[in-house]
Amino acid sequence: MPTVAGDRQTASRGAIPAARRRRRLIGERLSFQIGLILPSVLVLLLFQVVPIFIGTDASFRRWSLYDPDKTWVGLEHYRYVLSDTNFLFTVLPNTFLLIVASVGLSLALGMAVALLLHRGFAAQRLVQTVVLLPLMIGPVIASTMMRWTFNDQFGVVNAFLGWLGLGQPAWLADRWYAFGVIVFTDVWIWTPWFALLLLAGLKSLPKEPFEAAALDAAGRWRIFTHITVPMLRPVIGVCVVIRAIDCFRTFDQVWLLTGGGPARSTEVFSIYVFMEAFQNLNFARGSAAAVIGTLIIMVAGLALYALINRFMEVSR
Amino acid sequence: MSLASSAAPLPRRTGLFDLLRPGARAAFMILAVSAVLLLFLAPIIILVVTSLRPGWGVYYIHRGTEFTLANYVEVFQRGVVIEAFFNSFLVATAATILSLGVTVTSGYMLSRFKGWLPKTWFTSIYVFRTVPYISWVLPLYVVNESLGLYDTFFGILAAHVAVHVCFFSWIMKGFFDGIDPSMEYAAMIDGCTRWGAFRRVALPAAGPAIAALGILSWLWTWNEFLFALILTGNRTPLLTVTMAQFVTELGTEWNLMSAMAVMAMIPAVIITLFAQKYVIQGLRI
Image 1 (cartoon, rainbow over the protein chains, first blue to last red):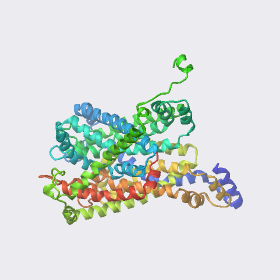
Image 2 (cartoon, rainbow over the protein chains, first blue to last red; image 1 turned 180 degrees about the horizontal axis):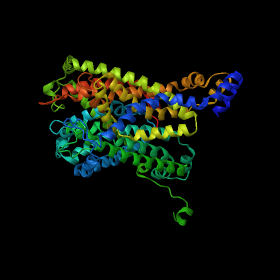
Image 3 (cartoon, each protein chain N blue to C red; image 1 turned 120 degrees about the vertical axis):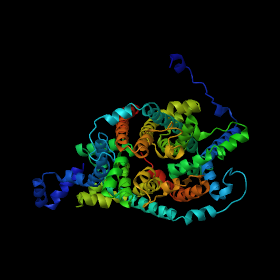
Image 4 (cartoon, rainbow over the protein chains, first blue to last red; image 1 turned 30 degrees about the vertical axis):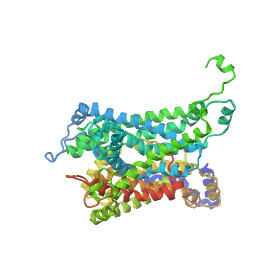
């Protein structure tokens, strides 16, 4: 398509550019494409690809102050990480549990909010503004306020539970309560994202199927499960895949709420890498864990991408 | 589905919602809306109230009626806080301008061309977007340290621009996909170069969408924590890390931490109130 216009343009300019063009090794079209992506490619290479190579290289070496030669140790660090019971039986399950719980709950809640906003009511603009807030204020402030809200001694949640006459758990001192608070915070932050994207999806749906279903006297739940969800499937699918991949690298919420504690029981992948590298000061071991995590999420990401491509073609 | 059920006339399905009388239905709506408002507003309100309570009255904030602005004054008497706000503002602004500048052409290329090069580039973008931040920021820390860039403005800025490359190229592609390319072809027939058609025709058309992304980019950089934690120290204090440091040996100074969090929240609130339309436009996938 652009070639047609491009050729005409060179033709109208006369023979000289055409001749110069023929002598070039790379076509004008290709060199324009390269020019367009060159800045991005350079930034990506310099600040992501090169560090990834350095990190991968470091993961095969002994990296400490006592060993200035950085001796090549092969797979030693990988063997350590892959036989670390903490990594295998706490960190990885936590990471995947967080993905499933957070993505599932924020999808369900986001769908509910989207349906509510789609109905339209008097205070709709106010609600939409409030719903947008968590996404805008970001995970750091959100985690800070959640940590205070769930404070075991002075927090509002426990004050409220006490008023109801219920037990007041030490939220951040127990593994599963702490994990629950992390999931809750993550859901609090990401529900708005699902809600807004699903709302945009709902608004773009054609009206006819809904009118036809109403004529056939289908109930609300039936309309939802048989028309709304199947028609929204591409949007839901893309949202879930993007969010699931991003959720794998969650760091801020966990670090600020529990710091991976109590006793390293709520650590997720990013926290484990950080702890190995900066707390245990073993940069090479941290890098090995980082490489393992990257491989896991890359494979999962590509599989999800393939899945969603098929998924969306089928639904079309 | 069985034959009988598909042949028989569909019975009127009455859910719980339809059984309710109109008054009760309105009550249900009010209840649902209040629940949503409570869920999303309550933690923010608690934070704001905490920031307004004196240090001794922070505990059990629902008791007592003493309110004060002293926390804000005290926070700002710490030099590091002002420095952190200034640095975060600078990093967010510079990172936004640079990331948009770098990725706008990349998104245009992905949208307008077909072939092996765009395909390869798109695949790389997808693959690198899945890489967890810690996996490249950890070695970037070592790189920065050996280059003398650790704890400098440029070191943190580079990380922010790099993290935006993949994601923004992807979103920008969507922006340009929504613009009809025929105007660009017309411009090229009239003697515009390819570059001219991009700059004079496509870029202005994508302007509002790019501005929307810019607003989001600014906020994301403002709120970012992991890069700041790993790549900066005492020389370049940034907002989020400074805020997290209100945890002392004696416990967390919740009143001061809340005051700073409320201050840090102001840009987000202003943007949500006045630029909501743009934000929603920029939140694409």
